[in-house]
Image (tube, rainbow, N blue to C red):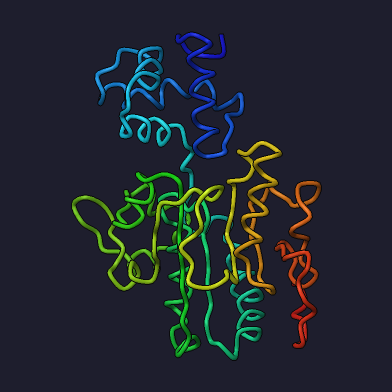
Length: 288
């Protein structure tokens, strides 16, 4: 028995469904949570247990049931300014580097891959909004994508609970960029319009970017992939990355031994860049 009260075959089917649809695998510490995570789905669709859910997945053509099942098994953990020092370094170094690199086009494309419910993308949007004068005349596209339609739906609305709004968000920014409502804290219209959110599977779907990505956030996502899926994911990221772009991974993630598409940045500590990145004509910004 893998976990819970369902048959082992039911767990294996569900794990296979998750990997085939998202590329993610379930670690042992997540397997035991399957039944708890899927209880709302079973109640919504009138199914008694996991075995009944798996039987329905196999025998029915319900796209809604499949989407709900996969969505419930995803880990949508995120919060504002996660690892605040990362955003400080990006603001002070990476964006300054890209500002010089893209001075002629005055365009910047930022992709948040696996954005979940949107806090990371909104954090970046706040950073730009607070420097409007500095970026005047620039076209800054911030795009957030995730395989979870439920998470993207929440991100588009921009509504967060008291617990969510306090996770990583300073009080000054909370009151400046969000309105308190009976339903929760709602992102102001000016903030919401700065980010485009789209449902997207990064392993199979082309990201909705109008230009190659200058800065890619793919944090705490690849650690859920198997080695072959991770290699494929890195190749997908490189395919849309601008030549002199930066890749941001989670604190527990690295490119070492995982891919030859990216290497640790020679310019900015803690970031990664395409392995074939051209030598810049401008002076490199020293890592802090």
